[in-house]
Structure formats: C-alpha cells, structure tokens
Image 1 (cartoon, helix red, strand yellow):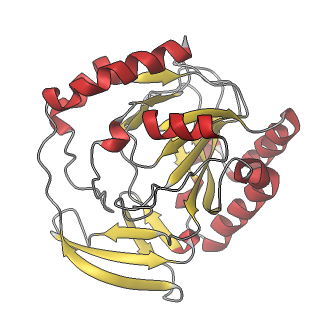
Image 2 (tube, rainbow, N blue to C red):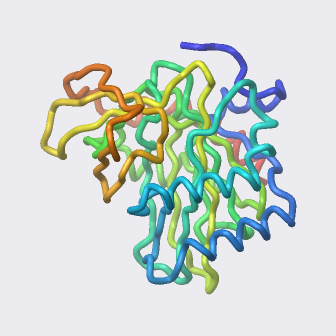
Length: 288
C-alpha cells in the first residue's frame, strides 16, 4: 500500500487517515450558483426521488457532465491533493419530500484495489444540508475495518448483522453549508436519510485517485455469481450503470486483469466495533 500523503495540508491528512473523512471549504457562492444552473440542465423531477447522473444512458452526456463540473470546481478540489487525478464528477439529487430515497449504510464499490491507496471521494451539497433534508451520515473509523472488496453488483455485506447497531450508536450526521465539501476514503461506511424538505437536494459528487493508480473495478455477472472479474479502465465514463449492475461501453482502454473467486469475509460483530467509540465521540464533538 502507498503511504505517501494524499493531502497537502498535514492536519487534513491526519484527520483523513484517522476518521476516514474531512470537511473543507470548496466552492465560492459564484461556483455554487454555476453548479446549480448546470444541475438544472441535467436533473429533472421526472428522474425520480433519487437520481445519480452517472447512470445516464448516454456516454457522451456522462462525459459532458464530468467536464463541465470539472471546469467549475476541479481546480479548487485538486488544490487540496498531492498528485491525484480526477476520475469522476456527477450529480446526486434527492427530490423534495422523498419517501423512498433513503440510502442505507454502505461502502461504495471499489474504484481501486482496496489494498492500495483509497479512492478519494468528494460529496458537496449545493444547498445547506442537515438531518432534515438528506445530509450524509459518516461512520468514523470504518475505513480501516477491511479492506473489503465491494463488487458490482454488491455481495452480502460483512456489516449485515450490525447494521442496526451502527445506525443507532456509530453514525455521525454531518450538517454542511452549500459549497462545503466532505472528502472521504472510499472504504468509509456512510448513509443518508430521506429529504423531508420542500426543496430538491442537489449534490456534486466526484472521485480522485493517486496518479500512480488506475481505476479498478470488481464485477460479477449477477448476484448469484461467485466469480469476480477484475478490470482496469482508463475512463469511468465508459462504465454503463443500470441499477446494481454495470457493463462497459466499447473495449478500448478496458483490460481484464484477472479473475478471482468472490471473497467471503467474517461477519462484523458488536465487539469488532467497540474500538470505534472514541472516534465517534471525537467526531460528534467536532460537529457540535
């Protein structure tokens, strides 16, 4: 595993490694306004209660969204990082007054081999968010519980038996201002609740990798398959996501690295989580 610093700021680096996430000012009011206008061009009420533009069917639209977001905010984000490259930008929206847009506790599918440096994920709301309209809930320290391989489609979670306990005792709701960014280790558990407000909740999401790594995906043919194909891909826009499944658009820049059996992991128990309590308390104290 690479151990070089991800962040230029030593304090951010230390907090990122310790908690699995950091908060940082990111977008100016003018950038937020530009991103909200861009969001309105690509996300509509007909898209459903929860919509991720990374699932748009047209690869050129996915590329266009990434390029336009990057033109507005890319330099601001890159300024925090040491030698990392952007692999994805898209929008994550919850419509107003949702009833079926809760995102359960999960780890994102791996964007890189989890034994290497983490996928670095950006989550930036374009309006103020809190527990009433779908802010993110983070689970401090869970980025170091694995590493776990998370496939497309996902297999049974090692956290399944402690899901209720995590939600009740280990989550930290993170209220944020528009343009503030939560930057997290892709191995961190996180979740969000329904949007109970009368206003759509738009979010810019993105990911970065240390430049020495290539995006790596772990893909199964279906939920019953116990075989995982490990691919490298030069551009994440070439991934076509439909629900829990993904496929590739074309073959250029896509390489099958190896085939492995579906990993199985011991179930996480309540005792396995106990060491996280001091981190959770410290993180909650920071939120206030």
